[in-house]
Length: 341
Image (cartoon, rainbow, N blue to C red; front, side, top):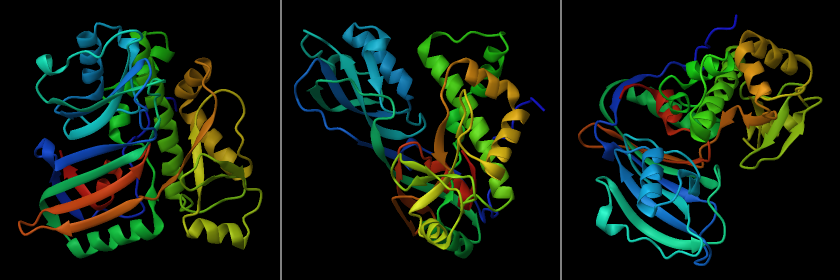
């Protein structure tokens, strides 16, 4: 069928807790880990901004207005949650101009923590990862089982679904309408949001299928494997004990498709599974190919760089977490708790 897929993650276990999350923005703290530190010289002004109650695009648009530049002169590495306290870097292209004075007109919820010049603009995706401190409140359920699951995630990882943030407010439906000729994106940012949502939907659908058949955390013949923490991938023709051992130790991971044009590089049953999912979502797959995107890959499994937790005297659960770029803290929370936001 060509309808919208089920985007809610399917897990290989049932979350044992119920909890509230983001009761206040301070319950969801995010600090971006930059991949590059600005040098101090150049025509791009990099700003580290702490924001509360605003999404990343809101801040980018404000910076453009305050600096009297076009929106295209402002860039950032990744979008951050609105209902949170987040710190992230932006860059503003200001060739031949002095640094603007921000302090007089900062909107509520925005603080400039640092600013330095650099020779290049901040590119989308150019970050090492993010650190999180999350507070879960009003918890009900089996805490012992939740701790066992957290320990299991540390040891074995968890399915690396795209989180609900990737789909925004109807972005997947808008992508389908765009591909069908019923809607046109307004500007580059909307186009990017719609393409990302469509890609994420196909990836999540492939991952759901591999969670269902139990292969999300093991290699199959025909897979493309990812080296943990790196962009490198390689073809898996046969799964031998050495590859199985490396996968069990979280050194390598199976991957799923970020859909585009051309032929899949997977083979055998993996290729058949991915092609079957794409056929069931043909409107999205064909729309992505028509927009000229090339096939890419994403790990099916997430291995947190750091995951620690502690129970508070009031019964709340604090989770300290470090994830790589493109991974979602809400996926970790959702693995142990059904949450009310």
